[in-house]
Length: 262
Image (cartoon, rainbow, N blue to C red; front, side, top):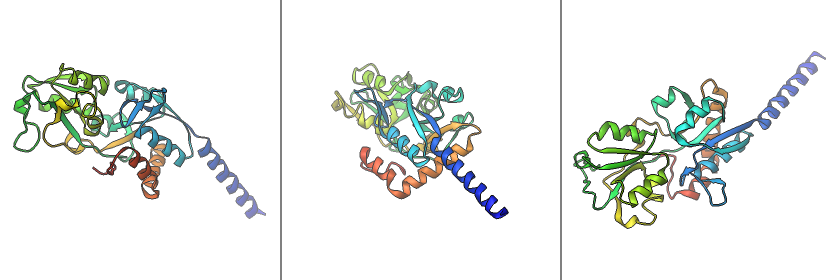
């Protein structure tokens, strides 16, 4: 009799936990201005690699998710203020961010590049990267509150660093001749300014950098401090998606290489 009571209680507990997982509701934020990772389509919907990846994650952890748009520079403060629960927005795992939020394992790695107008006079150095001396007096566009801004200000003090709220605005200034170069995720540059109108006048300068050059561990999913259970569930889902082909299907929709490992 006691065994049946205990067994019954266990079944109730398991059913409750399953229902709880299935009923979990999460609000996920992305930027919506960083193609091909995230963007707002002409019909107003959020699309891109991050959005597809977030939806697949939600399916894996049996959560009901709503994906919302959030400006980049207010992303972490809004997460902490509980305006949403998770950030899936190609956010690099940087030490200064880890002080404020917790990250999952990386869900992709991406190279960084500097592109410039072909008439800028910016040169390649002996190490194959851009020659810092040739950046003196040049205007370089970066997105605000990113590792790219931090790196550029620290390593290229003779250049003028111009910050933008969105990558598209920086691209427009480069093609319009208002800045000399753009420093950003190379995939964003490749799909944006190097593929759009005026691309023939712009080129990659030297080699790209790995994320580790900027102190980043890769792009991670951010959650609030103290929400280890959610972070662990997301980590498990990332690994499962890698193992069962879900990740590859999303990856191949946007890239012709495996972005998970640079």
